[in-house]
Image 1 (tube, rainbow, N blue to C red):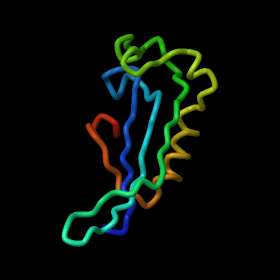
Image 2 (image 1 turned 90 degrees about the horizontal axis):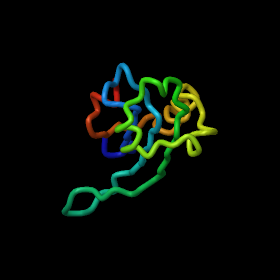
Image 3 (image 1 turned 90 degrees about the vertical axis):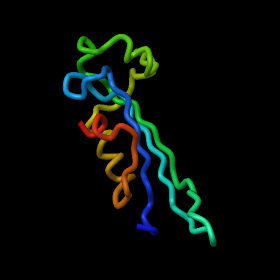
Length: 108
């Protein structure tokens, strides 16, 4: 585990229900633990990424969630679809240890 890169992942959605609402953004920070003699490791940032995802069901979106996440049509106009983004995330995080907050929601 000491040699594995950590992938800190966060998602943003169109609402507060992981089944009914959809992911509209995913971001991550990849960090390598670097040993520090006599201390715990420090983290060295390897890469940061952020992908906007084209929503397919805005009619089911919660307006408050869209406001919190800063959604607007212009910024998402050319966003790719979810499958395309997830392929990129899979490539970037291959072999990493995943780290996140509220992981059960993001996983769902």
